[in-house]
Length: 245
Image 1 (cartoon, rainbow, N blue to C red):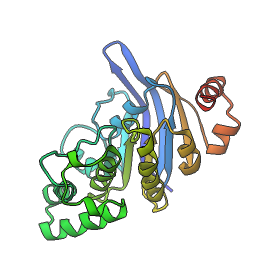
Image 2: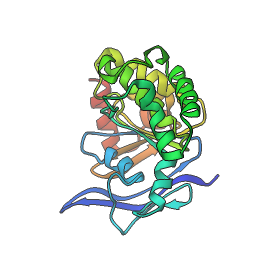
Image 3: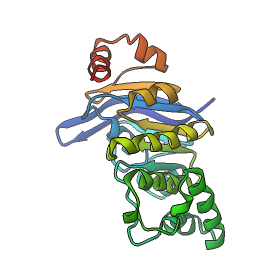
Image 4: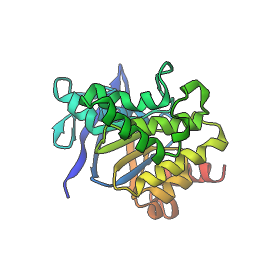
């Protein structure tokens, strides 16, 4: 099976600081990849480069669904294929929950309001929040807002979803409700890359776990390989620290 997302030799500098160093990664269609590692290891930068929210250095390349990710007219196509869910929910405060989810299909895909509303209703139902459809973001809890953000990303029918620490801004009691939604999505066959601090979630949901440190992929493998028998000392030390926390 060809890779839906392919990174070749991807490097990223901020001035003299190297945030990513020669990353090579293939993500297959339908695969769920969880990226773990300490803060500042390059995890978020990695996924932000995939849809060019961060520009990577010209020495490498990223290909999504056989399209080269670069500035220009193709970028719109890439972003239509790759949904992104951020730590902060980025909902439009002046629009109802329903309208937040309807907006992209109308603006980017040219769908009628009627069709977009049907899609939005289905997705809000799917993430368990349909009863809040006429409320505004400020009236919802953080966990509810993040579920709306997931529905909004799904409204474009992307081939892949990128999650940038989707639970890190949430109160502890709301983390579970968002992780449950992502777990359900993982069973639908959508390709996902999830940057997460939630080790139990990564263990349950991932087809593959990637451990990053200092801008590099240190180790990758199945959840059993990474969590039960990590080969690299750096991975072992990280897991010891976070799992005994």
